[in-house]
Length: 458
Image 1 (cartoon, rainbow, N blue to C red):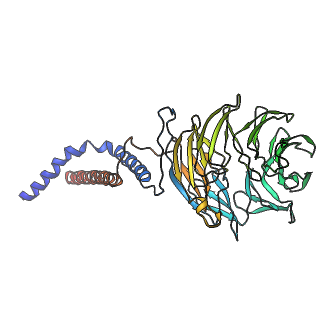
Image 2 (tube, rainbow, N blue to C red; image 1 turned 60 degrees about the horizontal axis):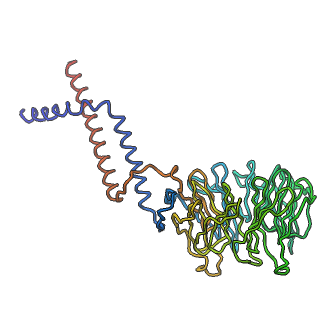
Image 3 (cartoon, rainbow, N blue to C red; image 1 turned 120 degrees about the vertical axis):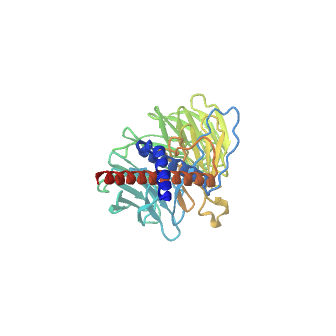
């Protein structure tokens, strides 16, 4: 009898302690869930298996150094996948080029899961639910959601006149870049609308603005009527000082009536879009005959130049004053991604670099792949041009595609200090135990009350 009284006394002594907690059950659950989320963010940030380095920032650097990237997911492709990916409606499209087989991939941009693959290779482009892919000889149009083919058109039967650059789609007209010129196709049927025969060997993506097609070729930039093959003007690089050397022209950038491009003679150019008259030229690197040239990147009155030698520079387009130059790895023809005042470049040394867009200071370097120079044959390796959307950077690199959280607006909430993973797990265990004990006490208390009510009723 005394033992029962002792038990009853112990239980009743707990009643005042827990009776007041009944209204806080939901908040406790919320605290538990938030604790799990915070703990998970610590674990994710602490368990990044890819090594990353961070350079020291100068005291004069005013940028907040950006968020060091964290790996969200990676997807392995069959071979080289360092072409710039395309993002549309939550789907990431990329291509890979292999010795025996090549593919176009459609991936879930949030998870990296494969939605579909197609046995094609080329430069993917998305418009109105259709995926346009152009390889060296054909143009394919696929359903962007399923990968099913809508139509295909053979552009070159082989033996020359191949497609040399990504096509461009504007106003339901597909402009295809050939070794002999430009061909305009009806984007719905694939029927030919017009041809411009040079031969001019268009080896960079054309630019279509206000019914005018601007295209770069060897030493020359052309302007055509977008609805016909009528030539409006052309500008030829002066090569009198070096004979008839072959210099490539990069893809073009248009801003406020001015066309900017880079050429293999080592100069960056600015032309009037209406007339093709030269406004200025700026020598930023040494001549590189027969070599592809990276397109300039224009932002807020500054033009960023990447000659592919490992040195990036920023130029004020008003007075052509060089603001800064910075070394990034071994060099690559990577067009940067811009976000929150940060420029991200890929390099042939297998690393993704981030620079302060104002000062050129290195913010961080993120290794993704082995250097291109260390790969047998030099076929796979290096980092391509990245793409940033909603705080996530997507980039092709070697034999894979990577998604990295790079923006502070995306990173999971975390405390302003660092906790080791084992301490995080300990906190999680303690929180779980406390919540479980509270739940058990609530259950026993309610059960005791129901038992007392039955006794009173009897």
